[in-house]
Structures are given as structure tokens and as C-alpha cells.
Length: 300
Image 1 (cartoon, rainbow, N blue to C red):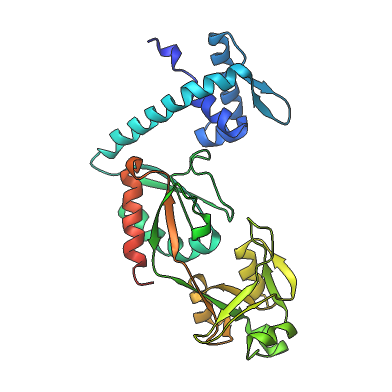
Image 2: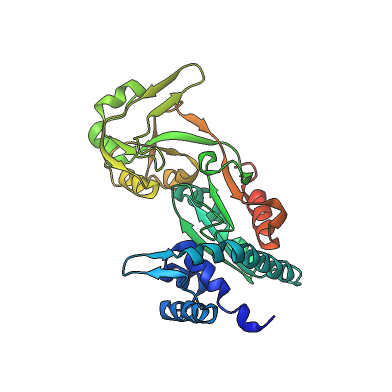
């Protein structure tokens, strides 16, 4: 086997998977022009056009589709082999690429990043925040962190911490102006900040329980967000009442930036999950992160 038979295969797979020279360049840590040159060189050696390029899109030719089908499993196998060799090193090293929802990041990741990075100085973390479901394999993520609905059925998932509690919160500024609701039924007279679900596209209804009663309310939303971080900030800014998982609001509540309303009412939701494609191919880096987060979030 000649070396030039292998040159450019990883680059081609990245471009083909992302349908973008720019995204491939970002993943590979090189310039877009370098990626383009590598693919052109590969096409020249093979004597076929693999990719159709326009100013707005990149598409596989028929030959490119067949070539990708054959070489992608081989490239992935080579990557796994490299990971296994790296895992045998005395000191765990390399990069972990994670995707997380904003609430999950604030609740179970952010508080423990400093201790993890200090403990494993040769491990790097690349964290992308996103609310929607993600195809971990095709987008090059090692793992994701979020709620159960973000976990596809064919993934392995482990719980980080205990169940979460949804609670209604508002700023002192809002409550001073509008007063404190005493019952979920009184929310109809208040400005509530809605959350638009990234999968269904609908504004979530608020479900309240107090141990004896259970009620579902379609809130009046003058302001709606699809980003939980923006929703949280709007509540801090006094724009209305928000309904959020309690975990990532503890600090704001302790500082007085947000106050609990409708005390005794709320809803229990599943714990945050760390999920990944296949337990058999899990790297030592990811095992260390899972163990670290589970130990730090135990009882939370």
C-alpha cells in the first residue's frame, strides 16, 4: 500500500459528512483553502470528481457517494485504533467534544469543569451549547448532556445527579410591580415568559403539582424564547415569571436575583443524562469525565 493511497481520506470524509469545506476545516483545525487543496489532490490521484462545488453548497457525485460508503468505515476504524493507543498512555490525553443544553451545562457541567481540567491537565474539552437533538456520530461529538428527550434510543445514557424540580421564579423588580401569585390559577393575570420547544416548535404548557393536585396551564406569554439562557436572563431583567429547572438557578436564588413563587407547586422531571454512541468504543477520557461528573453530582 502506497502512502498516497491514504492521503486525503480523512479530509474527504469530513467534507462529505458536513457538506462543507468550512466546517471540515474547523473540525480539522486547518484553513478552508488547505482542505480544498487536499480534496483536489485526492480527486487528481483517483482520476474522478468526488464533490460538486457551488458557491452555496457541496454535494457528492455518484462516484463520491460510492467512495464515501467504502472509505468511511475504514477511516472510523483507524480513528478508533488511534484512540485506543492514546488510551494506553500513562496520562489520559486528547480532546473531548461535547454538546449540551444550556440548563444541563449550567447545572451539571459548569460547576465541575475547573476540578476536572485541573485533575486531568492533558485532556481538552470542546463544548457546544445546543437545545435540539444532535446526531453525535455525524457531527463528531464524543457525548452529549441533556434531558431524556434529547437522547436517541440507540444511545447509551447515564444519569448525572438526581431528578430535577421545575419551579416558578421571578425577579424582585417584577414582583414589586405586579405582586405575588398565590396559586397557579392566578398566573393568567401575570406576564409569563414562554419556552418554545426546539423539537415540537410549540410553547410548553406549565404543569404544576403540589402532592395532592395536578394542573396544566396554557400560560399567557407576551415574551417567548427558544433559548433557556435568554429565558433565564429575561426573568432576571424583570420581564415576567419563568418556569425553569431549579438546579441552574440556585446561585441566583441565593443572591436574591430571582425569588421562588408559588411555593409548594412545581413538577419533578428526569435527571440530566450524559449520553454517547457505544459503550464498547468509549475512550478512557470519556470514562474519566463520566466518573468525575457522577461523583460530583451525586445527591444533587
